[in-house]
Length: 208
Image (cartoon, rainbow, N blue to C red; front, side, top):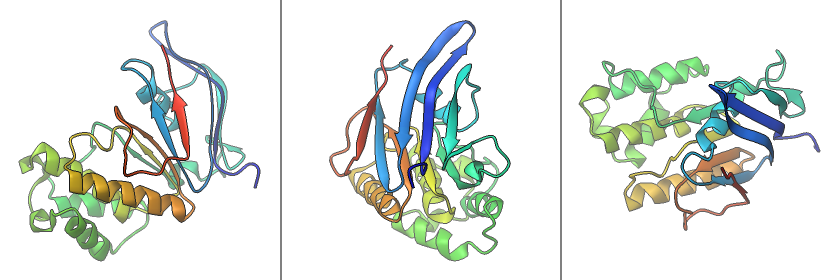
């Protein structure tokens, strides 16, 4: 389908009279991984937040499979999984409780198996009963990555997902992203460095 995937056209975003993004164009096709790069302050996170509906655009359009993402029949926000620097986990809940919470938001009512699978793959299965606030920063990051396994989605937007990961976890994440794309998923991610383990289909540069 020629309209399949995520399209942004002439996208301009500003805040406090400062232009963050001007005239951005992109097409994220199904079964593809796109690497978004640029210097700090170039607008990568702002673009991602705009694509996720968290930051309004001053002009331009964003369409998912040919329909505006704001339309009631686009299903975009049901299809989207966004992982950002702020991990959006409840500090007082356990890992298991946090992941069940996100799974239920996606309509997955019995996620025990998926949670156990993801936690085992990431080496945190022994921590599932631990409160999120008690974990190290690296462990918290791994909990967030579990969401990629636990929650059904069709498009992943991942802001610096490889930061501060050990080599084994970087390999796991790269393989998980490639498998998701192989199954028809759309991936957009940022990173300060290109990931050797990852097969990238498209590179997009943002400049000041």
